[in-house]
Length: 144
Ligand SMILES: [Zn+2]
Image (cartoon, rainbow, N blue to C red):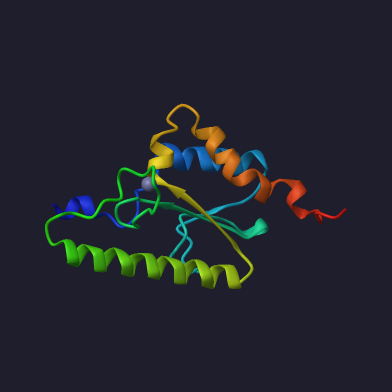
């Protein structure tokens, strides 16, 4: 395994997913920031007005635990090393998400495999993930 393959986070900047996320946020006329270092784990994109923090996670490094994910595997070589590493990564991610949530923010995770499988419907995928969090309806009380 080469070092290059071990990017901690997908390179989001300038990618199709970033473009789609920004498009959706802009359609709601909201401001966003990229690589927001004021929150734990430095979310890739945040929407301050709605307190939404978006992480675009690479499945290998963040070890996506999902039955349909084909990227998050544990290499056979140095198996134990990787297993420990991934467990620690997942724990760290979870700690970060918990801290952010405790500050009143909502965490949205977009996984590499989900993004890859939606090449032509990426906009819909992003809308689906964000609509309920950033539309006006999200301000209303559910009991109204
Ligand atoms: Zn995945």
